[in-house]
Length: 499
Image (cartoon, rainbow, N blue to C red):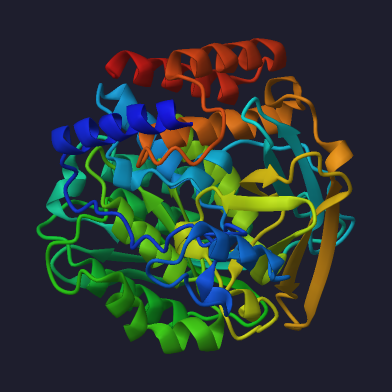
């Protein structure tokens, strides 16, 4: 790990000095907060080690029964797709835009699905060549979209950036094409509204039923044209006002923000923007779905908006990706199966010496707030999987129970809480990450790739060089015949050449 830490630190310094992405700055780093010993989550009710505290004193902390890691569920994927866009343009992504959990969650998984609403829980793992270190994967899955009965109708307010920067090919034109495709895919009992913003915001189409009005909606989409500055705050505020005016009881009410998020006029702070609409957001349960576009992209602002808006983000760079998002992902996210979903993993202090959650830096939750349903979690729809990866060091020769993972969520309609759990024993760990299941190998490959592109902290054990990782990804793509894994392999190969 020391070799990799040194190499990736140099990479991060080189990449950071050579790149400047307008309006992209990383969110505040909360620290890993998830080691059972010296890197424990002190926000969970334990004091941090005092300055000058020696190793023996820190080792005594392992006697404390609190071996917990808690986070809000996140199904964002924008970071991975934006990194691929940067690599395709011949440049390394800014390390501050690399969020490992979004790399990991960009790939389909074959977890068992629950019969009804809620989650299934899968916990597996594999040993690495670093002594006593393993990778442990926690997989959560919701039911598939094909269920008995129909989803509730959707009331979608599209907030579309028409500022000057959106004139670049692959921005507003891509949004218009995508909206046209999606308009044909929505049901007659669904509704849409259109809000545009540049230096000011305007509602160009109030909430309108699809039935009998598709031509009117298509005309409104076709007439969109770029204008001046980017007052994103005004767009979001007007979007929520329009959503409330067109609110439909019994429907899924959602604001869909399509923008390069390069805000340069008015309020440009995500917390401040969402605070102005917090009443509508909380009272009416209106969630935010962010769609990022453009080679220059305000990743940090869009990601923060989605987190604060109880939603999530994706990034699209071409027509194929846009069609996938608007024809598959957005309709799938019209329905919700869980609100304020959180996960908590309890590592057994008898077998686990230390652990580290990979990513989820902006989604950490204090351990004591896991069952406090007033604390925000994540909103998850049908057909989703959520994956969290841990680096875990076991006690030498440890045998027995390793970890228990619990997911807690609220029913979208009744707000009743529910929980589901899964366990992992040490003897269930595979002998090698690279001989494990397809899903675990994919997760590990994506996480190692993100770690190489990101801050270069060397948090993952037994990290291969990028050329070695590219070989692993090639083998995985060949054996699975998966296009998405082939895309991952090509991205790793490109990054290796750019270094």
